[in-house]
Every structure is written in structure tokens, then in C-alpha cells.
Length: 142
Image (cartoon, rainbow, N blue to C red):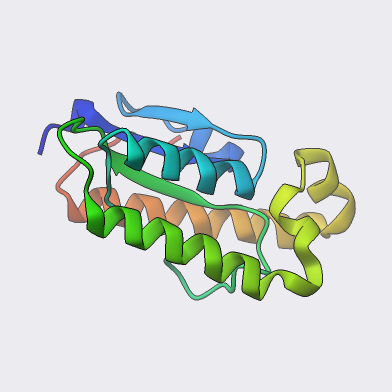
């Protein structure tokens, strides 16, 4: 796998601060992370880290990061099914709190205690770092 073709789509500022040659595509909210990922899959990218990874339920965390591989060959149907099912799952689980999908950084600051928001950022970052490590990627921690 060519690491220069990896991309992290995220709304987590802790991911954006990583010192790595991997392209980091910062988005304003979870919904944008999911739709950007879906659009990139339609353009030929493959999902590397599952959009629902981790033990934190989607309706409880305002952060999400997804690693994709920009191969730009053909439509990867498995990746398309994965992201479409993840979007459906998010919509179902967030039905009673759908605003969480579009929380801006300012919304997160006002809706979550600082400690909880920090924990959510840390969990999301650790999931991404674990995925990168399993791929054999050596990274510099910020």
C-alpha cells in the first residue's frame, strides 16, 4: 500500500494536528466527514478504517475520522456499501439528537464539558493511530 495515497477525513482537531505526510482533509462536522467519504468512494477511493469503528456510539460523540485509500481505479462496492450503511446507521441512532451530526466546533464547546470533548477527541485519534500502526505506517505524534 502506498502511504502517499492515504487520506484522513476528519472533524477532529487532534487529527488535523498530526505531523504526517498523509493528506488530512478537515471537515466542519460529522455529517461532512461521512458525505465527503461517500463522494470520494464514488470517485474510486477505498475505505480503510470503518466509519463506525470504536465503542463510542455515533449519537454520543461529535468527532469522527475515516481513513481512505485514493486508488482512483474503479468503484469499490464494498466501500460504497460500508459508507452507505454507516450513514443510515448514523441517521437512525441520531434520530433523537440529529443536531450532533452538524455540530460546529463552537457547538461542541458549548454542548459538551471540556473533559468529555477532550476524551472524544482522544478516542477518535487513538482509533486512527491504531489503524495506521496496523498498516505498518510510522508516524510522528503531535
